[in-house]
Length: 331
Image 1 (cartoon, rainbow, N blue to C red):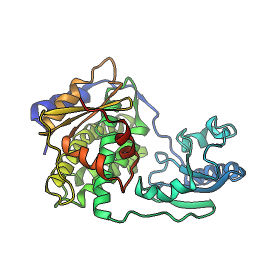
Image 2: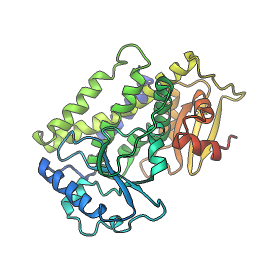
Image 3: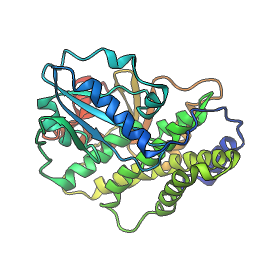
């Protein structure tokens, strides 16, 4: 179900007609270039005495678009290698494959519990001691909480930021579109049917697989259109999760006297509304954006029912849940 035709159509037409400044476009790569980059990474990081284990996560699903992501488990988490931050010694091609992103550093204790905080898809052990992870006990509850946490942290802001920024980061857009597949999978497990997301998922896969076979103009228009659609899909996910919470036996909805509350989490602002609708949500969010700048502190508009699982499920100890419990201020 789409937001109000007028609001969504106006938003879509405006962003489709915008003259985007495209940057960070994918470059064609071969699989052996990823293999060489992996060898270079391991050659450096396995030399540090403080490194206990090295893992890779994610999948190389689209050559030239996919990156390599690493987790480095440290004996002393406060003593991180400094050389990686400057990428000294890595080639420009290797930096591109790493997406100029430093590894995720974790202590052994945190790595063991990380599957209950944020699951890493395609986790692969590469070096050192293979550490056993503690898995969540209640998979159904955990999946819904994970979807809530992901939507709260990222959606639909990450896609709106791409569209309204002065420069449109193409490779980042392709990665974020692919990442949206995971919360879709989590939510689909709780609802009947495909909620109209199947065509979107097919298009994202097709675009990534055929990127270098299309003309520059064609693929640029295609990725912009899918990012616009991703805004709608994001709102769909939030709406569907709220529906699941309303009928769930393990969640009780918040009851607010006011129609909305504002939550401040560190430097991010969220608006939680009692009567959530995609139309209302989109109208509030779009009012925060302008052609001249991106909203620095505003993050999202969410159903008030999200507050209950975010604040009360202590046994799951998600990153955002811990943060909310310590930082939330409601006015």
